[in-house]
Image (tube, rainbow, N blue to C red; front, side, top):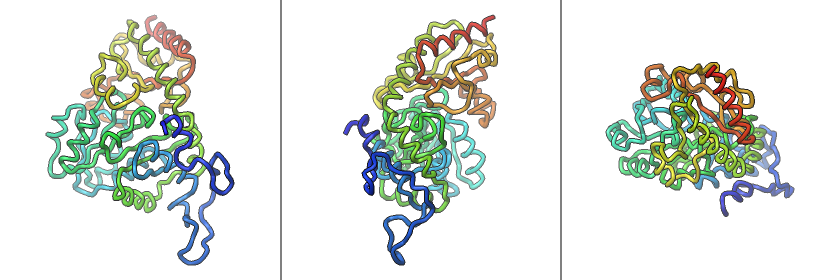
Amino acid sequence: MKIESLLIHGGISVDEATGAVNIPIYQTSTYKQQSLGVNKGYEYSRTGNPTREALEKLINDLEKGYEGFAFASGLAAISAVLLLFKSGDKIILSDNVYGGTYRIFDKVFKQFNLEYELVDTSDLKAVEEAIDDKTKAIFIETPTNPLMTITDIRKISELARKKGLLTVVDNTFMTPYLQRPIELGVDIVVHSATKYLGGHSDLIAGLAVVNSAELAEKLHFIQNATGGILNPSDAWLLIRGIKTLGVRMDRHVENAEFVTKYLESNEVVQKIYYPGLKTHDGYDIHKTQADGAGGMISFVLKPQYDVKKFFESLDLITLGESLGGVESLACHPASMTHASIPYEIRQEIGIVDNLIRLSVGIESKEDIVKDLDSAFKAVKL
């Protein structure tokens, strides 16, 4: 079954009890047991819930993994994955990841002596040089948030296997519609399902998919023991969102390519980060591992222009956190999504104060460009 169909018919797409084509919201905390130790597959909703299970099976089918897990947020999913490791272990981390991912490594797990090292994971030699006896995993985003750095997933996975390490990929920007890391050799995929998978800015959720029975057993234990599960109502909303992922992503990509062409010709813009540009570092690698460039664009205003005035001059495009919804969103990474990263590190890796991140929505592409054009004209006055 092709992915366009799998989005709709994957997982548990029909309720066996009634034949309903939408899995019901099983709004229950517990289940009647037939006798001691005998039940119908469910005993307590932290451990398992039919609505959440349908979602977990769906994301597993889409990512071509062994088993999927649903959490209360993307960071809850990442936290659960990090709990697979122990004090004294080290994880190599892409150097311009989402600020919340950096924060949880640096401010939470570092307290328990789980070490990390920021590395440009697009540089295979740098990654190999960073591996030592304590290293247990490589955690990458590709494209990264917000600089769209591309990492060769196959080569990183091959290196990790050779060294006996796990590979974790945050696939939020691409979604399984455009990129499936497990097929490229990755052990664990995580998502902030709040973004493109939900697609409507109306839920918070996280997903993880593993590639083996061993990892599935460990992650299920952590999910059940720590309890950061997704509630059934949001699981149902997320299933509904995923059904339209294909048509939405096609429109996101179409609009992003149109906006990028406009940005290329604008005198206010100093630099553009978009994997669909042939001039983008990693363009050729991205083409081999993904089926499209996605809907995220970052660009730098020339230093003589006022970033604050640019945001204040937007009308159709909303200034706000998050990404991947049907509406276009603009954000200022240095003060918003990546503010938790120290200034010196931001400057070193390129998250400068005049960097703007744009989540291109599915509105009329002409209207999006018209709004950008109006804001650019305003900063030139």
